[in-house]
Amino acid sequence: MKDEMDAKALIEGMGAAARAASAELAFASAEVKKQALEAAADAILARAGEIITANGEDMAYGAEKGLSPAMMDRLMLDQSRIAAIAKGLRAVAAQRDPVGDVIAEWDMPSGLHIQRVRTPLGVIGVIYESRPNVTADAGALCLKSGNAVILRGGSESYHSSRAIHACLVDGLKAAGLPEDAIQLVPTRDRAAVAEMLRATEYLDVIVPRGGKGLVGLVQAEARVPVFAHLEGICHVYADGAADLEKARAVVLNAKTRRTGICGAMECLLIDRAFWDEHGGVLVEDLLKAGVEVRGMGDLLSIEGVTEAAADDYGREFLDMICAAKIVDGVDGAIAHIRRYGSQHTEAILTEDDAAAARFFERLDSAILMRNASTQFADGGEFGMGAEIGIATGKMHARGPVGAEQLTSFKYLVTGSGTVRS
Image (cartoon, rainbow, N blue to C red; front, side):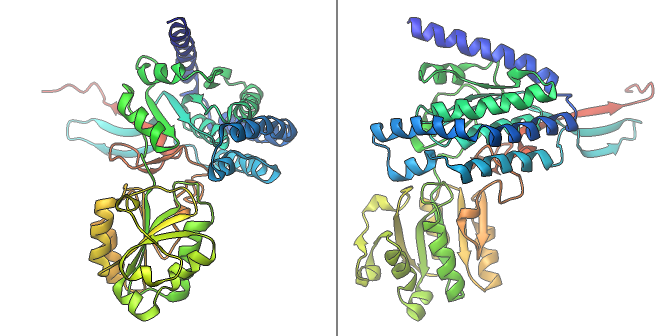
């Protein structure tokens, strides 16, 4: 009971401080926010040694817990990844500030002039698992969009997140912004997560980033609105009119570039016409790259393919494992994705404009691609500098959630002594 009370008091205190900070951030100038992010990037590079030392503690903790190789890869930081974090902060800093944008404006016969203008959401809670770079991405995007943020990193990334957070605070101090604008929950206690999910008085939205267990818990228990995707069950469909070399390059990249991210291909769909012309070349490429391919029917004629279980379709492996299936044309692919997909990201490989148009029109995933790897399902690759997550719901934000998606709007209405008849 005492721990629960302590967690409640902790989150209430952080929430009140964040609410106060958000009031200042809402009208902070674009230049001041840019200055804070640039200074944070400088601090990341200057304190790279400290961050790597902290990450070493987390890697040891992760190994002791028996994290999978994919999860350990997500957790690990080295010089190149730290440089990428700093680069991401600078990319967000360089973006156009969305706050105050006039989305639309019009005049009414009554004499009123009306503007719809972007405004911050307020206070955002971000709950994430092992990837420590989320600390920087989320902090930067919330600051850019004029929102205060409370970050709760995973127990595995505890030390790394604290080291990165310290750099973000350095940036806030350098720009004269309130330090409470970016806060990190200073405990591994899971009671703090439960309190965040109930903190409707202080938090305006929750963004979970992590595995199905975390996201499912947040979606089920949160009283605060949630931006999230439950799983990244991404499909790549090789159409009968696919260019063979393009298809081979995309399929291999979509699965093997990084298997632990939500944009990794989890199921390969092969058109019967592609199979008849090219055989199992795409599957053979995956097998040669060390991917375990689980299939059925004709695919079992390929040496090395194992028989798929019923639950291998619609499964997020996040590993060097992939489901595969032969389908009858684009409509067969669409039917499969509708049944097993998670509305995250799907790709069609084809030179047939009509097939691509049908795929785009009849599927409703947040991201649809043509002749491109699903690994591009990322806010940075969409020109957003970074992302706070991928949202697959249909309310407000959808797809990569960047600074613009972390705003709402208000109406500014101007009259001249105007009265309603």
